[in-house]
Every structure is written in structure tokens, then in C-alpha cells.
Amino acid sequence: MRESASIVEIWVYLSGSPLIALFITLAAYQIGLWLYQRSAQNPIANPVAIAVVLVSVAIELLQMPYRTYFEGAQFVHFLLGSATVSLAIPIYRGIQHLQSRALPLIISLVCGGLVSILSSVGIATALGADQTLVGGLYSKSVTAPIAMGIAEQIGISPTLTAVFAVVTGILGAVLARFILDALGMKSWWQRGFAIGVASHGIGASRAFSVSPEAGAYASLAMGMHGILGAIAIPWIFHLMNR
Image (tube, rainbow, N blue to C red; front, side, top):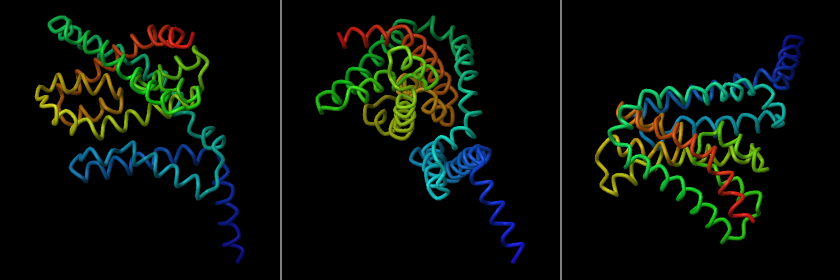
């Protein structure tokens, strides 16, 4: 009886500890990655999407407040800063490709970035969404660390923006294959760059799992979109909200 009571006490302590949140986050992603590999890398079995569902279920069952969860998982959040700096690597590696295909890549980047903003903001506004929600959509296609920084700069919730960015990345990673196939896009560099512009790091991860060339161009697009977005999105936001 005493042993059972001790186990309960330990579990109560662990469920209230921020450290268990980090364990849940890492374990959920590992399970998602395992399922993704077991499904022969089917885009529908996206590891990030699976991890989000598992984490949501876990903290709900544990009745863990989001604040407590974030305290434990903030180490992963801290690493987003390093991830932002590392965007220089794919840009550096892709300089040669950028020089040989500079015009189509730059045009694709600008058009893709504008479409991602105008389509989502336009639809949300037409449906009467709250301005806070609309504001969070401006940088949804930029990689999450930069998107959160942009959100702070324009006075929008970074957390809400991060949610939109992650959802956009997951949807892009899951649906890109089918959309690009329907459009008849065959070249890996074109497919990879389109995915990187639209769905940043999560999409780039999917592209790497399919083709090294697609992954390289997706990473290049993600880095370029991050730089362009950090400069242009605050200006576009203020222009559209005068």
C-alpha cells in the first residue's frame, strides 16, 4: 500500500514538473519520426503533425497548464535562435545555384511571398476575422523564429504567429507533393524551391527526405524568404493597415 502511495506521489511530482514537458516533446517527435519512416515517408504521416497531436493529448490527459508545459519545453524554443543563425549555411551553399538561376528564383521568391500574404490576409479579412488573427497570418510562411520576431515588431502575438507558421509548414509538407504533381512540376530544384518559400523548415525537411537537390533548394528558399520577410513584411503590414 505504501509502495503504491509512493508511486502516486512520484507521478504527481513528475506531472507538475516542467522537465516532463521536455520529455513529452522529444518523445512525441521520436514517435512521429518512427511512424513517418515506417510509412515509407508518406507525406500524410508528417512527424511534426503527429508530434503536435501527441503533445496535445498528453498535456490534456495530465491536465498540465500550457505555462507549465512551456517552461519545460522552452529549451527547444531557445534553440530556434540557433536555427535562425544557421539559415546562413544553405544560403552560402546555394550561392552558385543562385547565380546561375538568379532571375527565376528571385521572381519566384517575391511572387510566392506576396501571394502567401495577400491570399491568407485577404481571405481572413473577407470572412470577418479578428484583426489579431489577421495580423498573425502576415508572416506564416516565414520560418517560425523569424516570424515570431516580425510579429513582435508589428505588435502581433508571437505565439499566435508561431502557431500559424507551424500549421502552414505542416500543411505544405503534407500537400505539396500532390499540388506540385497536379501542376506538372517535375524538376526537383523547382519543387524544392516552391516548398521552401511556402512552408519553410518543415517543408524543407520533407523535401530533403525525398531528394537532396529539392532539399538544398528548399533550404535556400527558406533562408532567402526569411531575410526578405524580415525586411518587407513590417513595411507591407503598415502599408495595408493605414
